[in-house]
Image (tube, rainbow, N blue to C red; front, side):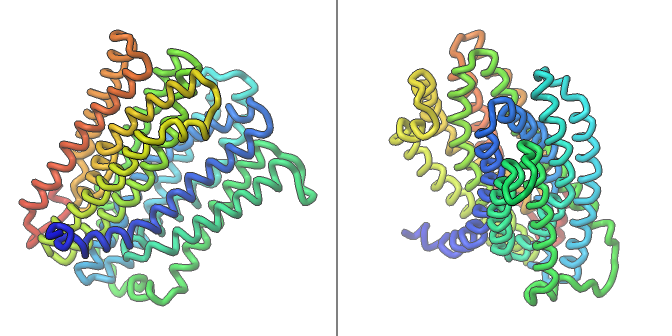
Length: 454
């Protein structure tokens, strides 16, 4: 009880900040799920094409999404320090960062889209994927602009607007998919291309709605007016200096799980199906952990701006406690309800048996996954991203993937070996990231703190 009373105000702050972020992130995930569900009704070729397209798209886009996560702790730090002028500068520089990232990402995606034969797909799948990816790529700029403004708003602790806009966009996306995919309300039947058009229009809506909301609502006014320009480009540099390592953290993590799926695909189609069932459910719980991570980053950044060392430590620890508690609850759920969870996805007896065993393993790495996810966020709050990126690379690509190949193929443990290796990598990351925050938050000198120190 004494510990609870100690952390109660910090836990309350994290919860208030995190739940709108979680709702918004789940809305974005469900947007992709809705596309897949509606396209699945066409034929397996269209389903294969949208799955390939989304895999390629988000593997590249995650660099931009991850980089922009630096905006919220920087804004929180400036707000906490009582510098609204810096917040206004960060608003503009965040949009400039989104423009720069969009130019790079769109270029890379265009090259990949024009060379889909690199992925060894059938000509029909490649043809469908190409058209869909080109349309999806048009929505990259509005998506990143929305995320840039969202991060700015989150940094000011206004986390609800982006969640509401995301849910509205999800509803719009589903409605437009119904119109464009199947050709309702007098529109031509566009099938997969219709899904791309619907998603792109929804992302344009998100960007415009978020921009207009921030510009017209009174609570943002003190943080939008630039009274004086002083080293504006410095803030753009800071976004990339702190954000790019975060982008690569996400890239290496998603890349590792993608390669793990490839290795499991070498084993059998049934093993791959079981993997998809288990990883899909685990991904939902992970989205909640990322929301807690983002809230922890904002709370820690705000405490840094106020130069309150105690709040830096307690906010970070509260985020770790909340993340661990939630993921621990999810672990218990997986251990006790694995058969029911799997039954939602498949009725195949072989896939069901394998997926249930994978959920037991997923239950084990829930704690590690939650701790390492939150650890990355609270370290980002104090501007520490370079060493955490190295820890992530080692965890996934020096430990997880090589060990997965060894367990899976040399030790003949199959897909369970790959998952046990991921558990080892996640545990390594969780231990080193959490202990690094505890150490750095104790030693940090906020009297002359600057993220550039890292």
